[in-house]
Length: 218
Image 1: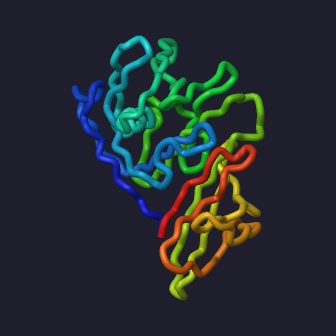
Image 2 (image 1 turned 45 degrees about the horizontal axis):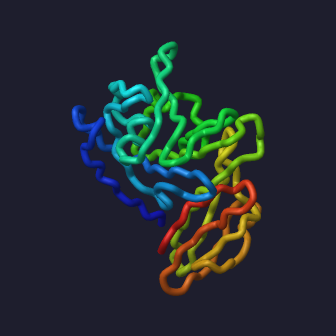
């Protein structure tokens, strides 16, 4: 029962010369303990070029993770590495990675081992960018991916995974809030079934090493 939103990217500045190619991958960007883009699943097109930190334009293949960031219109800094003929992001919106950290991106909950300029996205992919201030630590930051499934008996089953390590893990024990009030903790398998009344907004609050969670509405 996840709601997907569509972002139609206008051709602006760097992307105007090379048309954007639409795809249905979703995008969320998390920094400074909050979602700065795509609090809920948002489909984003992928631009076909980017401009590096020295002002040089580079062509991208269709449906790349870098192109998806460009297509949002968010301000970014991409540092080009000639030895790899690729670039990495050091800043998205106002958040810059520190000297000991980096902007990492996860595809379907797994840390991408492919650079953003080469990572190809599929229609079903869910992409999350997360800034890590210290890549030497194994304890986060983390973000939650939240899903909801409507059942035939009127209940809704919520499930969540925690993203921030090499792979997503089940978010057992995480507190689920509906309309700002806690309704319970997820079971060991990362799920909780409730009967919501009226319209609702669900999320897992940010706390400690948890930067933010995806927000769902129903």
